[in-house]
Length: 90
Image (tube, rainbow, N blue to C red; front, side, top):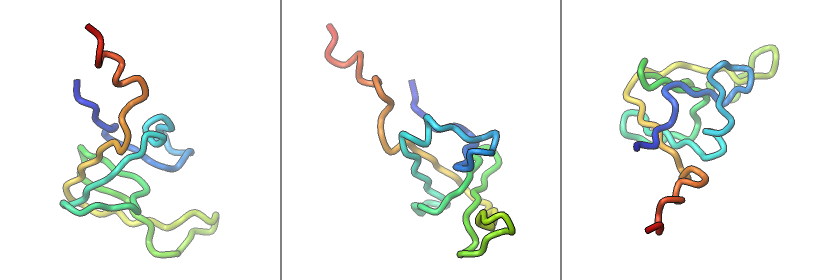
């Protein structure tokens, strides 16, 4: 069984693509082969990430973002809780 992050994920709790359980495990993003730590949202199938545009904010205080197109490779930084339960059984 492969342990892959969701196809589309956002760090904004108001988004329908927000997933608290996945975010608690930590998500790392490789975009065009380069490690990124500033990703606000991503989509693997559509091939884009959304990153903050400097320190600019909208009128509600949320960061302005820009969508960048390219190859997106997300991965979990920590294994799932209970993922090692079959190890050592026998």
